[in-house]
Image (cartoon, rainbow, N blue to C red; front, top):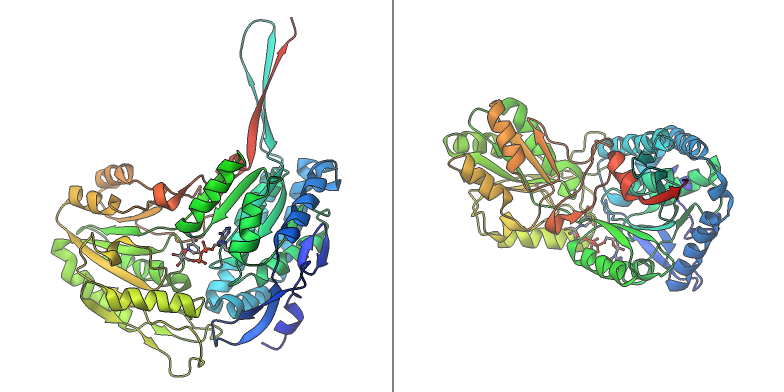
Length: 485
Ligand code: NAD
């Protein structure tokens, strides 16, 4: 990892095209989850830094070089950035692994998706058109789709590079000028990609990045009167604060707040196809994925058979140093998150069916938590209702389709559902009955799918990211009515 040093960003913010320290000159230590050691620092920014970033974005949007680019020119810049990310993918993946603790394989996959976001939205930038609406005789009515202006983005630590791209790419494609507050627990790849954006020629102020603590820098961004739209991904608790802040400034927001997503396995399912997907959906990224498949609902006649096989597979999962080529489960993000997940495991009111292990050579001081499989779980119990955000799967038996639907929908969340059945009619019926934003039939997509609109209902949040829907979120309609006689 020696070459990592060249890639480590200085503890600076990107404001108006320049890398500058926090006005207070304060910094925060960055620890690696792999061994708990401090290995970098970021700026510990305050409201004055956020204010400078918002002003820089405003200048870029209101007459600055960014505002003068055509949609096609914006798209080309984004394609250039996509290519730069792809060129630097291996180094970025290693940085992500060090900073976030995710296995190298996962980090490599993340960088491909990150590049893909800028490719997809770069290609889309000049393909979002307005409409002409038939109206009264003598009138011409046009519907224009305009950027909001300055968009504020607050992202979490679980996929720092992907979230940077997922949130910023559609906003930039529509012509907004952006201010991003990445998470204090992991944000180094986001800073590096911001630098790549500068190098490929994004005009000053189009992308501003301010690091720091959520309750200081994040709060200041969410409450800033110069922000025209907010995009937030993180916990429901902070999501509520963001929504209140948006309401006070009379602006819109999208919230992506996690879930307790079920996979429903009917007795006619292709189980051999389902097993690896079910395990991966909760092990991927240490279960620290908003769309993690954290509940498994199993039709009673196959419950024992499915659990026996899942127990075998969970028992074989080894937590290890994320930089090992074959690591599938690394450490969790922080000591705090480790404690939180361990508490859920200790206090679970259900039989523990299987537990993974920690590799003997896993670095001391890392935040390792072996995978855990619980079942049968009472669907109303804490472990079956609350988002653990760790490698913890809870199994619930069901007797028929109606009961499966009821249990699947019976949490405060509603993000993704996985459905395993060969019965085509059942696939349709159950998909339509699910109260969530995405349904996968005979598969499961935690993450990925840049083209696929994604978002939740209720405590999972609202608004849609990814796909063309994100372009609609990051723009608004203006109707121009012309009485030409
Ligand atoms: P969080 O919501 O506190 O942090 C997410 C982002 O919001 C970070 O950038 C943080 O700095 C910022 N933030 C924090 N407080 C803020 C405030 N008052 N105003 C504005 N911004 C603020 O999440 P966390 O504490 O890192 O994780 C806690 C739990 O949230 C996790 O255990 C998990 O259940 C959930 N979570 C969900 C997702 C997701 O992808 N949906 C991501 C991260 C965490």
